[in-house]
Image 1 (cartoon, helix red, strand yellow):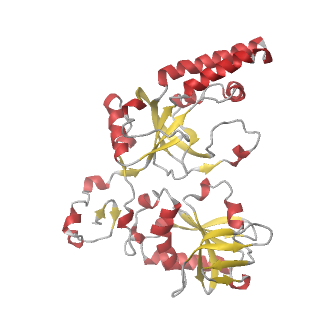
Image 2 (spheres, rainbow, N blue to C red):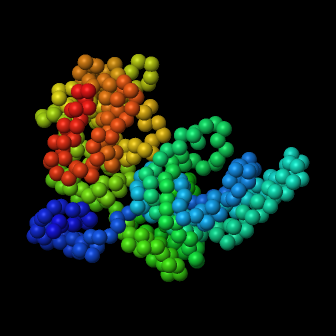
Image 3 (cartoon, rainbow, N blue to C red):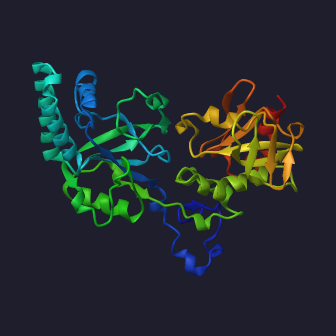
Length: 396
């Protein structure tokens, strides 16, 4: 059966293939069935302005926390690196109380700008928020599971947007389980520091194991949480020889684009490009009328230069078409120490790679189409098939 070393499948190798000091890391059959995940805390705050509070009153009918606690599925802010199956710990912000008291003070000062009925309604909602905070503030109140890929919501970039939160990336989440006994952050502050800069706090490795154990002491937890293993990618174990057999659950765990490029995409591109040609990185694209831009890579396929852009998740990019448009129909691309002219370039195509698919951008139609799933990239046959698909789309 396939050998697993630090969670990476190396094919049908014998145990003796590994140095003696490494064999102790090879996991047994029981662990091989675990669900490898990453996890994060989603911090639920309170409206930061009276205008935002009015929106919740008029359009939502409840606070975000109340809606979450009465739901089994939702769409919520998520990090761009979140993947389907990842674990979400929902927490009501510890410092939301100061926001509510500030709004109460502001409301009393501006009382005469509101009708008596509206003033009473706003004051009532603030008290309702304070009561919720007394019960749940600074506590993890529920757990859930990411059930859809992160997606950027460009509509929130509008100047008229009243929402205070910075995140514009959301993901569908399901199997939300409310905790009977919420866990206060003081109980895990020793090993997890909640981010004060944004709504997301990653919970990785041993911190995940300790937090799960802490929650399970006083709560029944769902099976998907009980059977999950927080598994950082063993980057140092990825080599020229084994990258191609990297299982999908690890390929999708890259948190940084730079990691994904260095440990996976570079290997992939070496297999796809023409033999005895260079892999160019961070190439300057010059296009009349716009500032210079830099494409992640350029490779040579069938004797012509092809720009390549790398993302963790194409679906989470709010303006991916605008990004790759800059790399098409360029006047020149600087690759290393040479300037490449349009007649040497696939000017109307850009190859795009994320942790799930390889795509082609067609500048003539301003469209992006997936052409290959990386789940099929498990041997050299996959490399040959990908090169064939790329050549086909470049010739059309």
